[in-house]
Each structure stands twice: as C-alpha cells, then as structure tokens.
Image (tube, rainbow, N blue to C red; front, side, top):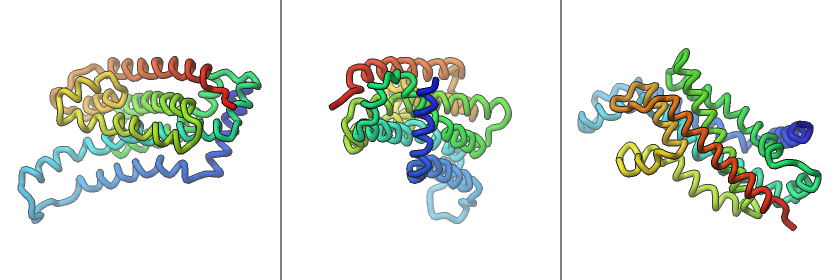
Length: 249
C-alpha cells in the first residue's frame, strides 16, 4: 500500500507540473457542450434539404454521449501509454521494480490519478447529456468502467515500448479504432457485430439505452459486465507484459 501511495504522489505531482496533459480531459466535454448548444439552433432558413435538418436534430441528443465514448477510447490510452513510456525512458520504472514494486501497485498508483480526473470528466458528460438521478449514476459508472479499461490498455502499451514517441505511435491506431468504432457501428451492422465485444461499443449501447434509442434491447448490466470482462483480460495481459518487459537496461 505504501508503494502505491508513493507512486500516486509522484504521478500527481508530475501531472500538476505538466497541466497540458490534462487539457484533453477538458476538450472532449467542451466539444460535447458545443454540440448540446447546437440542439437549440433554429435550422429554418438554412439552405439544406429538410431530411438532413431532421436527421441532425434527431441525432443531437446522442452526440454528447458519442463524444464521451470517444473520450474513453481515444484520449486516455495514449496519455497513460506516454506516462509509462516516460518512466521506462527515464529508468524510474526499472528502479521501482528493483525496489520490489508489484505490477498491481504500480498500475493502481499511476492509474488512480487519471481515474480521479476522469470522474469529473465523466460527470460533466452526464450533465451535458441531460441525464439525472439513476440514469446519471448508471452513465457515470459505465463511463468509469470504460476509463479503467483504457487505463490498463494504455499501461500495457507503455510497458511494451521504449520511449514516448514509440508509445504514441503504437497507441494512437488502437485508440482511434476503439474511439471511432462505435460511430462506425451505427452505420454498419457487420462492424457492430465485430465491435460488440469491445468496451467502447458497450459504452455506446448503455448510452443508447439511457437515451431510449429505438431497437436497443441489450440489458445495461450485460454491457457493464462485458466492459469489466475487457478490464480483466487486459489486466492479465498487463501483468504478463510487466513481468517480462518491465525491466530494461
């Protein structure tokens, strides 16, 4: 427990010294807020077909939750991967392992900072989307479950790389697939079936259920269970990779 606290304090101080890392935690909610404001725009008089106007208005309530899903998939993975890769590049991870720090303690210490900031971001998304009461709690819980998955994926990628540049190069394609996947699934049934096992798609399913989107019948508890199954799988992968690749010369 003491090693986890030490790593947490180290990461918290590092984040405070580098506030630019936290900017992306603000960008996505701000974009969602702008999209929410657009729902009040009067499209009358715009030179565009009426069917396009109707489609835009109909989809506006789902845009905030779509941005939330993109945040969970796209923003966090490269951030965590970069943090871990920096520890590897500066040899601090090697020192921690030689000092007997366990993989779980290291992951919790580093990930807790990102997780706590994500609590505020997830709550902001819930408010922007207009959820209240039980729906708000369900949305935040599902979002934080997805955040946990992204943190572990980012940490695993970071362990596999030797520096921050390599971490970014490896994490961005994965983050983009997970972040944009739910959007593609809305237009392609095959993509929806393939992506069904991934947590970002399940975040989208939960949001659709809360938004009362017609045709969505998956129980919310099932989606959250799939998300945590993702966390468990990548968590096991992280431990394996950490033990094999954690110490480098």
